[in-house]
Image (cartoon, rainbow, N blue to C red):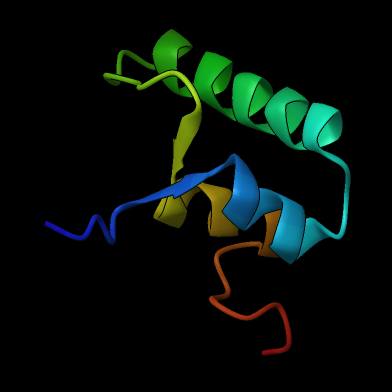
Length: 64
């Protein structure tokens, strides 16, 4: 089953153009924020919607 709800480290590396260590850092930071708000998180993955909200102020592609 394909998961369309979360990004993994490879997705973050591609989107941000960063190395693996930075991508994991981004995932940890965003998951920490979500956990503080009471959301369930998964190590090594980050919710796509929250990622876009934090990276692009809620815009899906960053250009709108």
